[in-house]
Length: 511
Image (cartoon, rainbow, N blue to C red; front, side):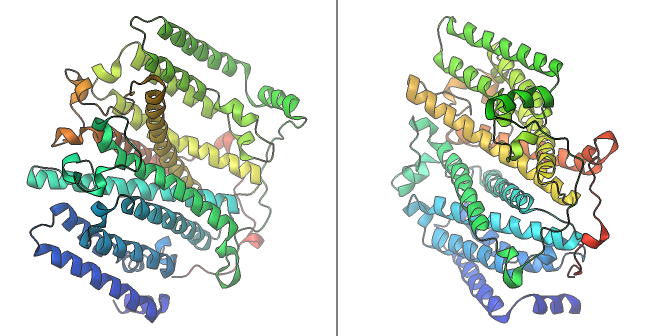
């Protein structure tokens, strides 16, 4: 205990601790005041308590074992986190800004998404200090961006399971994700930042707005640390780039844009792989043509097949990118995996109607995607290493791979949502990629969801939240497997990750 107190005193400044405790006192006041206010809902009570408990994250990190990277995270990031928690608790709960203004919740989401990238940035440099391993700025940014998506998914899962807990305790789910039209009626929350095409779809809009805002804010934070990489400057400077650490990389065909493009296609992929791709692509074209002659004709299905077909050309698009980008180093294995999963998803949905006839089919696919995307992230990270001709620690590589999975899974939800919106505007018929319509699903297995929704009005968000839960579950399992067997570090696939001793930084990781 004495060592722990000494560590707190040596790692933080007195003024910082005073500021934190002022914020904690305000959050504790909000929580206690809610206990004596009959109008305060259980959802808000849980929210205010979690904000107060979350403000002790830095003290908890200081109690971690000596080998933990969290002991290397500076208190400045936690100051930003505590300030956001206090604003959420005091302004959002006590002054009820979550309901009195429609833009408060997106603003809080944007703030925390921005801070999450900075937190990921600090974790990346903590890994550099702890493991004495080189990493290029590109790898650091990739890790920071990926960690922000891990944090975002954890945030949404926290809100979701908080609502579930309230539902099990009271019989009616909480409203942390603003699903209830009835509760928000007469308040600013009755409106959505993104207008729903039909009123029944409104409960989904808050969740999708959070996802979109997170992406925009995370990109803004990434631009910020690129313009102001403070960990490479002044007293905060860490030596992130040192030594050549060259690995054996086969050259990629050079030349003019078009001729070089075809040479890259020939050099980087085998003929039988192309044959396999085009068999599936032509099958997809056949499904698209068939959908045009279906009776009755459903334009929604045709547009969805066409959108899925376009995803099957991602690798060729990567090869068309300029040679200074990382995309030219992407292995064709990534496209093979995308094509197979995409084709299975379309054929089982269109020809066999598995999405409606098999209750857990969609959940199974999302679990598989979360699982596989970690390995695709691993391939992307290794491509980045090849391009930079430098390396990073295995811990950083696997963390970036997991972040890549969370990022892609989140962007897929945006893709589904955008597809529904675009199809609705074009055809006048709102698509149901995210299964928001309870009335459309009466009599099918999709009426039952993985988690209890407690209220029909909450049904529209259950499919998307179920997808997120399954994506996260698959990603966690594959991350553990990849940690046990990082195949790019073994056997004939092995890259040379050995760093000469003279290239290692001299400073010792802080305790």
